Amino acid sequence: MAELEEMKELVAQMVRENARLVQALARAPVPAPLDPAVSRAEKVAKLSLALRKSHKVKDFKDASETNIREWLKRFDQEAGSLKKMSGINDDLTRSEYVEVIKDKLEYQVVKRLDAVFIAKRPAITWEAVTTVELHTCLKEEFGPKETDVSSLLCQFGPNRMKKTPEVSVNDFFSQLAGAAARLYESCHRCGED
Image 1: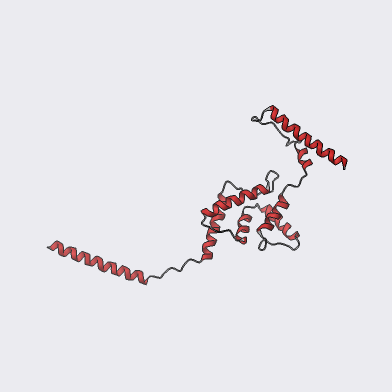
Image 2: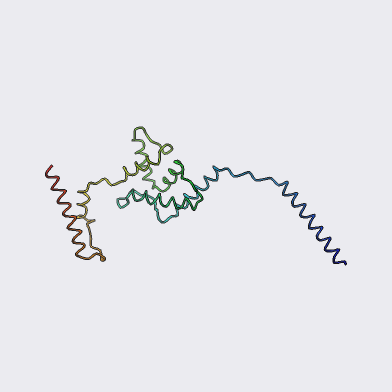
């Protein structure tokens, strides 16, 4: 019987403790709801960090072996996949996209784009540039600037076509002959003009 009284007292004590905890929770301040703009900014920062760590898209550097069109496609594809992982379901705004892509451009590229923006009429700023204008400026400034003839001539210079072990001699000779024929045709057409 003493055990039953002990159990009743223990249960009553637990009920009083639970009531006290419920009252304390009711008096506790309620955290303010998270501002959607702050939440969105955190997600974009998370996306930017994920792009920095990504091995699929390196920082764009002004180098002859880097094709800007291919880099932009890879960047957009990687940003799209990482965007979902960062919790962003809709498209990036213009300012968010510009900041994310600017973060992946080397300092020298950003400086050259600053000069290109100033030279445009009317002048463009980073705060007002649209995605299409940015892509156009990147392609104009860092895209291929050589003619077909000059690219064919490069095949016979120090960066000429070289036979790799996986290509047969016959296939390599066919590629070389085709390049020479195209060079001859383009030079012959230039002579007729």
